[in-house]
Image (tube, rainbow, N blue to C red; front, top):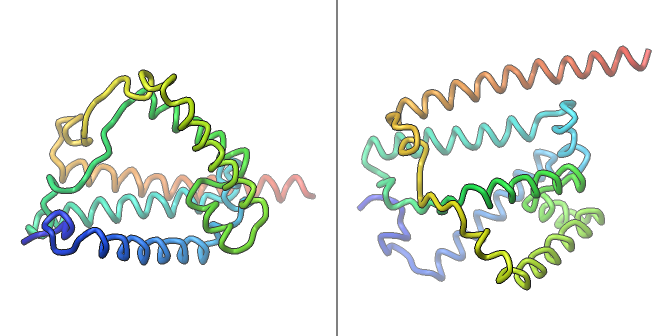
Length: 201
């Protein structure tokens, strides 16, 4: 047998919920230790003064991508069994923009707001309350926007399928892009820090 374990029936729904709970606790712990429970730190990326969020999230993306790729190469993971969220291009672009605006205004994304709530931050409690209210409103108006919500369907598509590039080459290109992003982020942070220092003189 090869992973994913749940798909192969190595454990059922009950165990999967326990695994998800433990994974979530671990993820939240590391977010908090990285300072991602601070709205100021999170919002700083939009002002290019602290791009830690960008660097951490890009690191997580390439780690998962490279890990899954090599696990599939050695035969441990069958990528066809890994669940992919179906793509609905236009509504997901609009949703991404709305989330981005909310991130800039409130200083949190949904995950980091939960971390901040766990550490007792009042602003995060207000933010999470807004998320819950938004979910409730969306549920009520869904029949009115369902056609848009399900528009421009592309199915469970991957970048190799979309571009026609081999999986390995695409992974290599994304890693190169990440390395370039890290170098660029360091340069921008130093640039902004020097500008701030000059303005304070």
